[in-house]
Length: 68
Image (cartoon, rainbow, N blue to C red):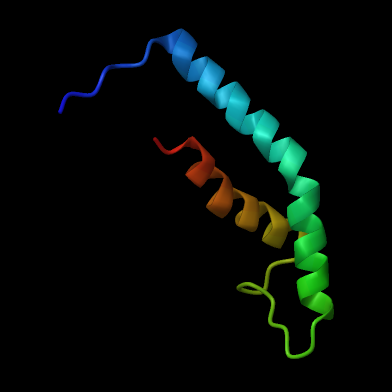
């Protein structure tokens, strides 16, 4: 099975799509992080503030949308 190489233009498009997806979904992850903080017996992720926690969540989940 051979993989085709991406052109620089295709890479820029994928990067732009990722950034757009990140900025559109970040508020959802921020709400999830805030709700997680309010839950009883909740723990912060590695001592991160709520904004860093939301960013970490987004950067963990979003790449799955780009797998194929």
